Image (cartoon, rainbow, N blue to C red):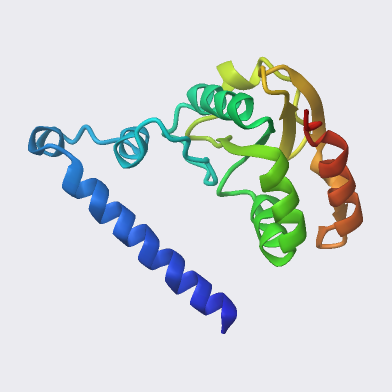
Length: 182
């Protein structure tokens, strides 16, 4: 029941947000069909960072990472880049893992600016991902410092246990790569 309530609240929030964005888009843009997910985010919160928590093949992943790095620099956190796609079962299992383990989610949000980068047949983001070490499996995590420098490449298979993620290993990974507060 708690999950259903959370889901309903989330859907109401998303619907409210979508209607607000639609109301703010000019008739010319609407008629021309030029509204993109990036433009929608910019209309909703000009100057405020909007985390990327969904794989979207239409997003500009390089820009998303640039914005995440800027937010990390502003807030003293690091960037956690999660590469995967809607097709990826383990990507959804990771989302469920964070949802079920609030302390781990809080640890991630306190120390990292999260950004999801799509990898799918529709958009493999090859120019962006070619800047990083080769990915062996999905999801894959990259940790960047607040200047955008790669600190660590993490194969998430090492964080798995059975048909899910290992709580202690995942927590240790986040703690190890969390930003040192100054």
